[in-house]
Structure formats: C-alpha cells, structure tokens
Image 1 (spheres, rainbow, N blue to C red):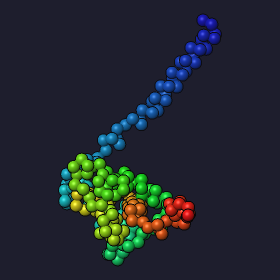
Image 2 (cartoon, one colour):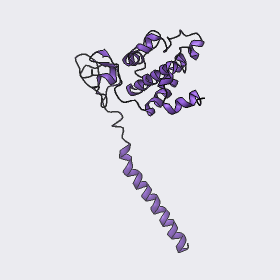
Image 3 (cartoon, rainbow, N blue to C red):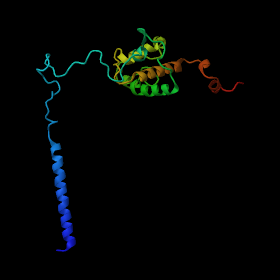
Image 4 (cartoon, one colour):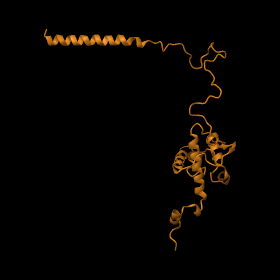
Length: 202
C-alpha cells in the first residue's frame, strides 16, 4: 500500500472517530426531562389549589406593560366624566392623512368615503348609519364620535380592539374635516386658494 493512500485512510478513520465522539458528547442533550417535566395543561384540574383550577386569577389591579391608561381624554373621550370637546393632542396634516387612511379601511364600507352613510355594505342591504352631515352629528362633541368608535352604537360594533386610541382620534379629526368640506364657506378657504376658486376679478 502506498504511504499516501495509508495516510488518507488514517485521516478518514480519525475523522470518523472525532464525529462519533462529538455525537456521544451531544447525546446527553437529547434527554426529555424538559418535555416530560411536571406541569399543568391548559384548564387542567388540580388538587394543589383550593379552587381546583390550575389557572390562577389575575391579581386585582394588574396592568400589562405599556397599558397604563392615565390620560382619561385619550382613552375614553371624556374629561372629568363629560364628553370631550377638544382633541387630546394637536392634530397635524400627518394625523389627518392617517385618519383618512384608517377611515377608508374601517368606516367607509358603511359610511362611504364622504360620510353620507351610503357605503357598499349599506347598498347590499345592511341598515344605513346616519350621515355625518346631519346637524346632530355636526354639533356633537368630538368625544361622542370617539365613544361611538370605541364602544359601538346600534348596529355598529366596537372598534376598540381593532383601532388604537390615537388612530380613533385621527379618524374623528378626519370626520370633522369631512363635515367641514360639506358646509365650508368661501371665507374658510385660505386667501391664495380662494382666488383660484373665485377666478380673476373683472
């Protein structure tokens, strides 16, 4: 046998021994102790606790991290228990754009894109919501609109679990913009834009 071939054979044998040794070292890690450890399955009965339940009730007053709601107006639409008449944060152009986007997703199917209450779902037989442009809703405080989005009203279900409080306020701001768009006066238009609408003076 040539020395080169014998050397390669020894190298392969050494590699096999090393691989076997590595497998033997890793084998203890395959134990099932963590898998078969004593534990309670969901909703399992137990004799350990007096009430027989393995699930323990949440400690009263527990608040999940990041969910401490100290701002009454932001989270409830109320100030001292009364419906808010102002927004809890300044509304910017970016907020209105976000509100328009959320309105289109969540509200327009029933309320339509202009807020008249004749959306596609209504056209297919769902009871029509009131138009945002009726006097009652034009006069309603912004807190009322926020409360309805949050808790639902009539055939409308709550959106608290679907839309964040901040986005609910942005939707309300956009609804106010829609209302203004239907009843704006020429005096409400900025000067430069007003000239475009009125045309050149003769």
